[in-house]
Amino acid sequence: MYLQVRPFALRNMSGLAVDFSAITITASGLGVAVKPFILTAVVVFVLIALVHLVRLYTGWEVVVNGFVVPVWWSAPIVVIFGGLAFLVWREAHH
Image 1: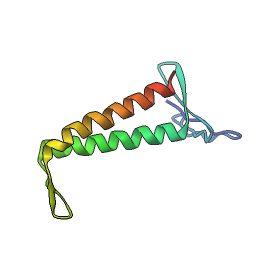
Image 2: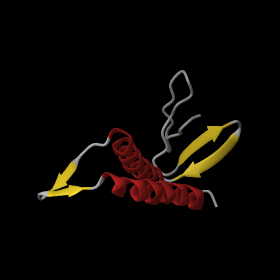
Image 3: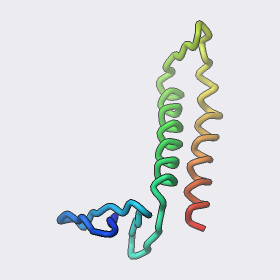
């Protein structure tokens, strides 16, 4: 996997570099250009889904302004944000 910087390239020994206009992720010889905003959105959506998945597993209690948020609310949130991450990632690749 590599990332490339334009107009100049910064690469380390593993071939990692950064491109600020589009991040090119190469795996198994297939290159896919992903804009930084898309990558950021996918990472944020995945992190939200993972935190709620951990909440489902551990049973963390969340209290908002005196209201105890039921743990089961995390289940639809995992599905919604996981789905959003998948849809944004898939749309970026079409």
